[in-house]
Image 1 (cartoon, rainbow, N blue to C red):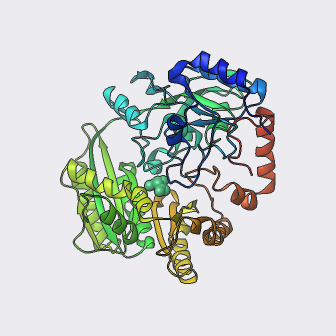
Image 2 (cartoon, protein in one colour):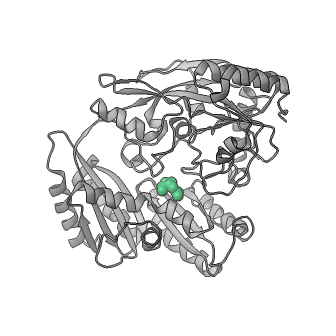
Image 3 (spheres, rainbow, N blue to C red):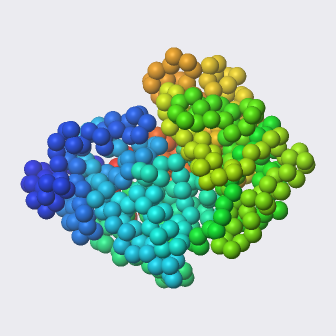
Length: 474
Ligand code: MLT
Ligand code: ZN
């Protein structure tokens, strides 16, 4: 069990970090002590915001000396309470937001080095400025930071083509719980010198150390892109449409996102300035994006022809091709606003599950109606990354239910969902991580040998349990 910090430690940190890097004022800390969805409310002994790796190292070393807990935080957009401290108030909240420099961009190496507090949208801009592209994006790109994206192995809407953070991180600089720093900001594509420490930290949710910077893989900029919205009868049609388009357009297909009528309706209701892309409401929709390299083929005409053939072959019912960049952005806005619209709608259970891709359509059709039938008043909003076998299988609370519904009645539904996912060979955490929300569910559903090895890794690197306690493990 970590200890509360001594006054001596707090004064030493205040002196080291200065007024911009250290505060105990409740009003300064308050915005960072509640998670994005307002489900968890934590407390902290202080908010420490170092501006350099050396200062992070000094903070970790000082905390290790007294066995004081640290909760790393970036954009505070965790969906699972992964960056919110517990209510005891003994931990220090370690904000990486001041570490917001892009250290280098190399078009020749195809590498960008960003500090942990850099916001994803700024990485996109810096890569574009060098004529390249960082091919990972998600709805929270305006607030999510590189450290959090690494620590949760974030996915987003281009995993289909480029993979999640695990595929896009070439190296990490990180401070480990004993205060040691590993300077691993590699630009190497091949490196077989034993254990790959960066992969231990990716997806570790800050429980093994503090990521301070990452070297990220860039890819070629695209010459043109096309975005379309397709209406369909069922998720099975969406999967056959994806394979049909891949057969014809190959790797040009970069995004393929499933949006049910229930999700589109929420967005149209809650997000100002949005409108439906198709004349008639369809039970299911997909947003598809294809790209062509600079000087490549006319991508919109190719997508239009492929979609025409797909509709003729019965893989969809209606389609709209964005005729301008503004229309393409409007379609993306519909997709990327689902989480926000759902938040405004009220309490919901969020399950970012995966099953093998081919099993997902049947899973959605069977499990969705079973839950709505067995728990009257609930509504399933199942959307997202069908091509990755990862859907946000969210369950909205019955009308009038308060926030406590999530912990009370919701727990039974979540157990059912996770049991069915596990039985289907799937994962209870395909995207958002375990955090606080899923630590008991992980302990219940994970293979015991795997969990035991994970615990031994944690104990070896962080024997005093100071790094992000209460996350990942019960
Ligand atoms: C998404 O795909 O929109 C995000 O993962 C957010 C969510 O699950 O609500
Ligand atoms: Zn997602």
